[in-house]
Each structure stands twice: as C-alpha cells, then as structure tokens.
Length: 78
Image 1 (cartoon, helix red, strand yellow):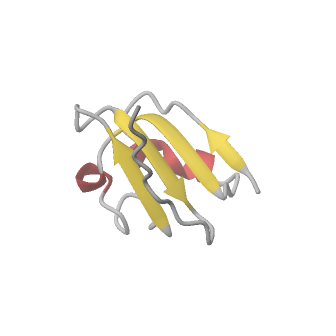
Image 2 (cartoon, helix red, strand yellow):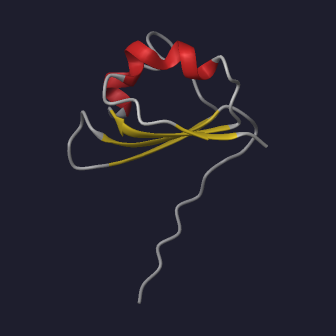
C-alpha cells in the first residue's frame, strides 16, 4: 500500500498531475478545496472514494482513494 501526504498549498485541481504520477493508493491532501471545486472527471481524476473535511471550501483536508480501499467515518464520543 502506498500512502502519500502532500500539502498542495491550495488549488489541488491545478496541481494534481504531478503527485498522481506517483500512483498513490491513498492520497491525503491538506489545504485542498472541496469536492465541488475539484470537479471530478474534469479537473481531477475520479477517485474510488473521497472524504473532505473543513470549514473553508478552498482549504480543507482531502482524502482520496485511488485503489480499492473505501473509507468509513467513525464518530467517537468521549
């Protein structure tokens, strides 16, 4: 399994070609824009699964699966 974390410093949709050449199974991207801005299939290759977290639609945390791995949110309470 290849996991890559890369802070794209915003505008991931314009920079994704270089990091995706490394063929990550899972890609974790701080300062990533939300799904609407990524425009999957047009500006960003379509991942098999995707999660995004953040309050600013231009600068959140994107987690992409470019493999058969699927994500599941688990909410832990203290």
